[in-house]
Length: 272
Image 1 (cartoon, rainbow, N blue to C red):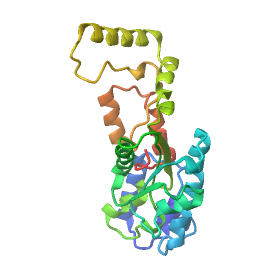
Image 2 (image 1 turned 45 degrees about the vertical axis):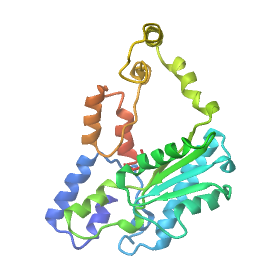
Image 3 (image 1 turned 60 degrees about the vertical axis):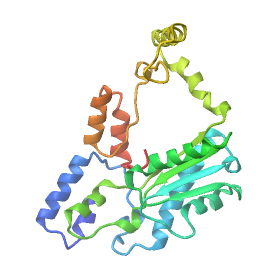
Image 4 (image 1 turned 135 degrees about the vertical axis):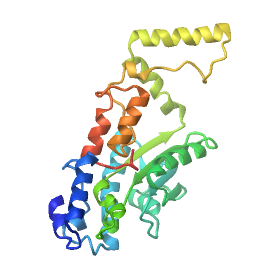
C-alpha cells in the first residue's frame, strides 16, 4: 500500500524514492498501522474538512468510549476534559465535540490545546494535574491525538516528507483523578506485583528513615518497580530515542519491548 501511494505521486524522482525507503525501513513502523481514509482512497491531495472530522470521530468513538467503559465511569461524572490535537483546530472545538458526542455535563471544564507538537500529551496531563490541585474529588479525562488527513505532504522537500513516513492515525485517552478512593489503587497494586524482598527493603528503609530522622534526598524511599513489572511504556517518538531511554533507565530488551511494538503497530508519538 505504501508503495502504491508513493508511485502515484508523479513529483517524486529516484532520489526521493531512496530517501522514503530509507526512512520507512528505519522508522520501526509496521504494516498494521492505520493510514488516513482519504489517502487509502487516493485523495491525499484533496483532503476535506469532513475527512479530518471523520478521523477524529472514529478515534473518539473507540478510545474515549473504551476508557470510560473500562473504568466504569459515566460521561456525566467527568469534571474536566483536556484535549489536544496539534494540527487541527476546527470551530466548534474538538473538546466541545467530545462533550456533545458523549453527553457530558454543561458545566464540565473543557480545554482544547493546539499546536504543541509531541509534548502536548504531557502538557495536557500537567494541565489536569494543576487544576486538580485546586479542586477536590475531580475526575479528569485527557485525550490526545493528531490529525493526519489534511496534513499529507505531496512535495519533494525531505524535511516535509518525514511526516508522511512517521505519523499514522490513532490516539489515546486516560482518566485521572484526585479522589482518594481512586488514588489508592497503586497502593493496592504494589503488594500484588512486587516480590516480597522488594517490599521488605522498602519497609525497612521507610521505618529507618522515620526512626533515625534521615534527611532523604527525595520525598521518601522509592520502590523499584522493575522488580515486579515486566514491561515499561516509553515515549514512542522513534527507535533511537527509545534505545536512549532504555539505556538511561537500565531496562532490559524485554522490559521495553511493548513500546517498540507500539511504534511498529500504531506509531503515534503525541499519544503516549
